[in-house]
Length: 287
Image (cartoon, rainbow, N blue to C red; front, side, top):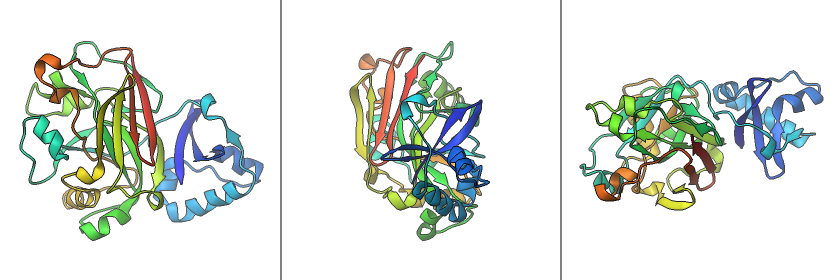
């Protein structure tokens, strides 16, 4: 199932994307005489009960909205944690001039960094070395602590597309990456969360385009630490909660990996498109 959020009357509302369009869950439930007001967080937290109810609504008389008419919200709006993985593709570690890590390299972003599909992201004054990073993002589905690799993917609710935007001049000002990674709007996600039954996270093509030009093209099978290993490793030290996001790292092709004389950093007006097989395309404009 493909779940998304869109803005209506100043609030994020839940939608289900199908081949026929987007079902407005609240409106469909109301027209069906049902008392349902699912939020994305509620669906993630209690998916065993919520998904069958959504399937019932789809099988009835779904009330649809046109995708061109909606304003997307971030597909997850209130994660307790946004955990990111650095240098998780050997090719990206190599282009960065760094050794492939022996354990996952973790850092974080905060909720202020979240942005939606099709949202214009305002560039801050000061930083000038703005870079893209196409990433597969995991959405945790239940409280997760100390799980094995074999158990790990059963704790994932779904997958989405992310762009780990980075201000390199701030990122490397100190040994801690936080400031350069957590600027407002620098963690766009979407357009949908696709539930795990529809996705094999170990073999997904991933691409990033800037103004239509292909910059990154890889497959998640090239990860150093796969999704199960990441969830298991993180949960050994940090309890994960429903709705938490894990950005799983980016492949080669970022601007930072270019020879210094060929680096042309992102600027206002650039159009970014990150596509992951089966998950869709996340589009953002820089403003």
